[in-house]
Structure formats: C-alpha cells, structure tokens
Image (tube, rainbow, N blue to C red; front, side, top):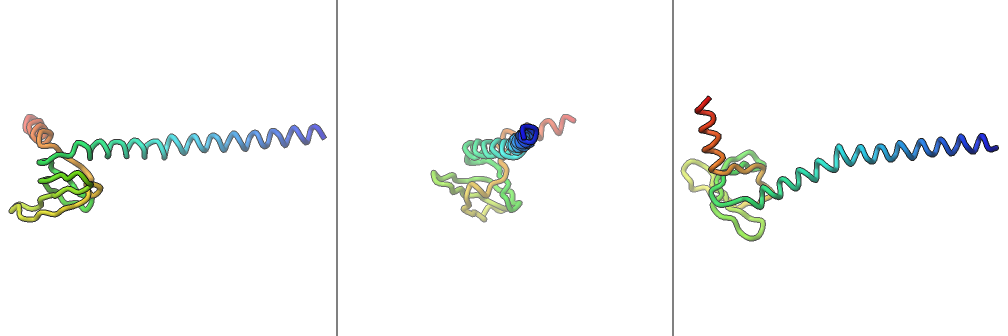
Amino acid sequence: MSILASQQAQAWGSIIMWVVIMVVFVYFFMIRPQKKEAKKKEQMMSELAVGDTVLTTSGFYGIVIDVSEDDTVIVEFGSNRNCRIPMQKAAIAAIEKPEEAVEAKETKEKK
C-alpha cells in the first residue's frame, strides 16, 4: 500500500508543478506585457496637448485643437481645417509631438 501511496503523491506533485509552471508562463507572456502596454498608453494620453498630431484608431491623422478635462478631445482633420470632430481619448492610437516631427525630418534629410 505504501508504494501505491508514494506513486500517487508523486503524480499529484508533478501535476501541481506543471500547473504552477503554466501560471507563471501565462503571467510573463500574456498578463505582464498587457499591463506594460496599458501603462504606456496611459502615459501617452496624459501627455496629450494642443497642437499634437494624432493617429486615430480608424486610421485618420489630425491635429488636437482642444483637450477637455473629461475624456474628450477635439481633433481637426483635413487640409482645409474646417473638419473638427470631438472624440474620446481612447480613440487615439498614436501621438506625435511637433518637436518629434521636426527632429525626424532633420535626421531624414541628413541621411
């Protein structure tokens, strides 16, 4: 009986070890990167200012002309500058500061 009991204990120990390994794997390869990405996006949204060029989640480029205290921004689209659309901050996928655009253009011209 003791041989059978020790084999069952080893089997349960092995199962528990694999469950722990799987939980650690899921945390480091799925949960942790999502948290880092959410923190990065939140920092990006906190630095949003008037005059920034933004890319919306629908693929439109525009310039921020007003940032309100709630989660709303007014973005200006088009070359004639008469298309102003209020949208939520969550609809912004990327932000490009005017200084970054100038620096990128200068480095591109130097090459």
